[in-house]
Length: 127
Image (cartoon, rainbow, N blue to C red; front, side, top):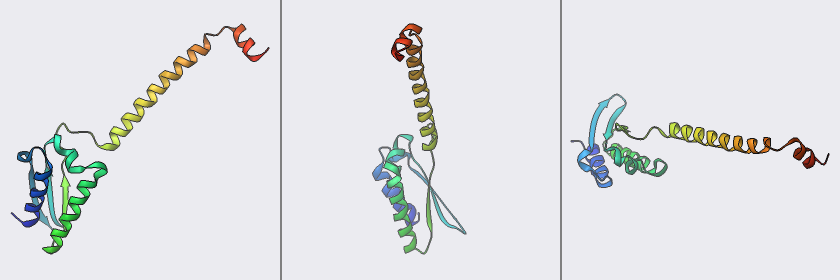
């Protein structure tokens, strides 16, 4: 096992709750070294971190390890089966749900306003 792969394995297994599920595949091509990481779906949040900061830090450290060995090292984190949908999709779904809820609430308010009699509406207008 190469140093970059050993380093990634050490760091990831220290972060996750299911170290036995950690799998790292190493490929080398003209672009450099690509480490592909698979973890348990329950551990994805620990690997990516809040706003991606943990993944970003691991990638930075891997580049440093790669520079020491005159190699360009990149990390790809595979989305596990049954994991969360991509963030953009979750945000669109959440905003669509909120919009539907607001529409329902407005409909209820419109119904209440429409139930006023013509006389009450005239009175409100001062006519």
